[in-house]
Amino acid sequence: MMIEQNNQLAELQNEIIRLNKIIASLIKQADSLNADQMTDFNLFKSQIMLEDEVHNRTEQLENALKKNKSINAELINTQHKMQQEIEERKLMQQALEQEKAEQKALIQQLEESDRQLRQSEKLASIGQLAAGVAHEINNPMGYITSNLSSLQRYFHQFFELITLYEELSANPSNTVWRDEIQRLREEIDLDFLREDIGPLFQDSIEGAVKVRRIIQDLLHFSRAGENQWEWANLHDGLNSTLNIISNELKYKTDVILDYGKIPLVYCMPTQINQVLMNMLLNAAHAIDIHGEIRIKTGQTGEQVYISISDTGCGMTPEIKANIFDPFFTTKRVGSGTGLGLSVAYGIIKKHQGRIDVESELGKGSVFTVWLPIAPVTEPEKVDE
Image (cartoon, rainbow, N blue to C red; front, side, top):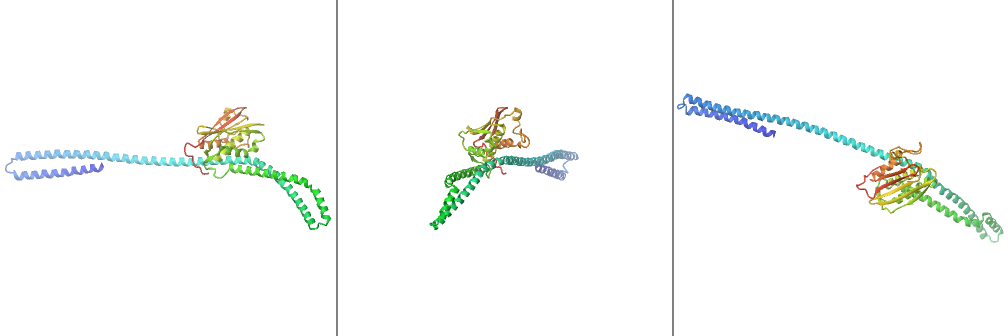
């Protein structure tokens, strides 16, 4: 638009120059052709008329020029305003980009804090369970070691007896070997050895199987690739978790399993196992002397649930309102991190599920974990 106005201004200026030339030519022509015929008055009149027309035309052109200058000034002012608005928008865009970068950095910090929180709680849980697992492994290993020691002694005596039989076979007429064989048979009580060796082997095999099962459950509970989403059997996770924490449960609780029919669930199995472990341990710690923990599973629509109820001390409404807050705990100092349920809440929320809690003081609590069979949206891939 600015270029168009400049072109119009140039055309007006050229028009003024052209008209001036025409008028000068007409005056000259009139002077040369009609000088004899025209009176001084007529000549004066013609000149006056031409001058008036030139004046009017010039005035029109000057007004047009002024108007054009005014339009140009407005255009320049508009350009300045537009330039200023562009600069302001650039500043706003830079501010928005900076804000986005700060938000991204904050989200990364929160994700890192969440990862460290989960890892801290997991390490605390593993530390708490280490003694129990060691005890569970130490028992079978104790009688395996004892049995192997007895078997070693028995086989040493057997080899002594075999050696005497070999000597007798080489010198059948030598009665000394016969007397030695009889003495050794009475000393080692061969009949007792025959009866005892079988059970010793059987007990040792059972102990080794028990240790292997504990190790397999440990591997299942904390296997590599914990951030992999996969289709998992929640009952397998429950069973391995119960085996791992059996030392924490068996002396003060009766665990009742009420498994329903549920499909495979798309989840991070190791993290779900951590949630179940935290809740089962909390249920056991809520029981003072001896009580009952009931685990119930089932499916409702496109969701599955795991319900863990206990006959423990229960909670007041005030305590119930704060149980998912980080570092909140009702245990004595040094007995808990206060992170278990907070971490569990974060894990289940990431799985697009929820945790329902019912509790009454003196009558126990019920924690119900709800999980979608498959997440509604694509789960976030988290690297830890």
